Length: 453
Image (cartoon, one colour):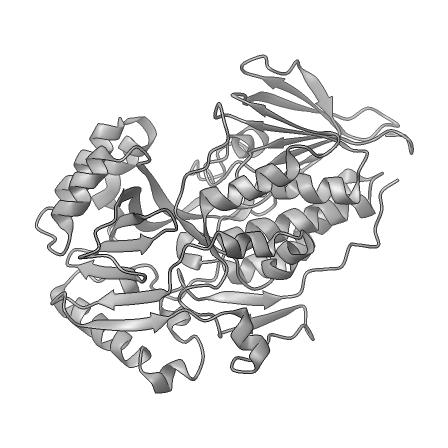
């Protein structure tokens, strides 16, 4: 690439990570031509609540979007762990950044590159529905000069070309011909845990497992009508025997977001649903959850009935993506496609935003050697990602017991953790329930002085 030729960049995925990449690439490299493709025919704005925690908060603040995120907060005021008798509860109220600034909770410092932060609440101050955050990012980037979104399109092939005396380039073809075969200086896979871009660049992995580390949990997610006799401003967590979990969370639209999951260290329990996840119909997937939740008590009838009617039902395997490297030549992965820490880590969105920022910054620093920039992006980001993927030993099984006895022990533990004394010690609950607490205070590099040529 000559010193005057702008980068031609392709991003696959228009959820949270792809638009974040586009924003920072445009900010650091305003002349770069950035194309974002999405396999859906329109922006995908569904999904459950996500948290902005730790290192990603200052990055989102730099984007000027933090107040918009707060305005779209889920309205959740904390978490109730409902005991097995469905009457007693352990309550964890929401706390946030303002309390740190007021002195009630120490503000994490940046004296070291990485630093463990155990002061995270169960419910984040910056908690927002995934679709709302995706919409904010899409609206922020869709009209930027030199940024284009192409929907209903996927990549069919990526061929990297090394020409003597020229930078590595990628020749890309597309399925639906909304784009012609084109050559790009940089290809970014930001298309999630089951990334198709990852398979095209790296294959299915040495174990033929698509680089997935299974955690023994499968979840169904959908929206249900709010019932004022059952729902309130708190998320409600209820464990049923057999590793079954109900998690019902309020949203700002007068409905309730339901999350049903089945957890078991015996992975053979999931043989059927694992196959249905790949090849089954929605009705077959729902039938599996109906069988699993039969006689689970609590709000089973309400949730299963609403699940059948929900127009936003989807299911997923809870897993981590673990890869020895995230880039090859001028192609790179970011966010869940490269290093999904899993929803139970609580920092998947933070990791995507951090990675997008660092990737753009390193590319801007090393325009004339993209492969070197991608290696540096990985080196810098690994410190954050390695900690984000470090789950509590035994998770998620520890928070989803199989037996009644195990649930009673868990209920007793949450009762102790909910006491005023223990809550005053900081976010210890985050260590036991990483989905709602565990995170890492990490200082992102400063790239604002970097301007590509």
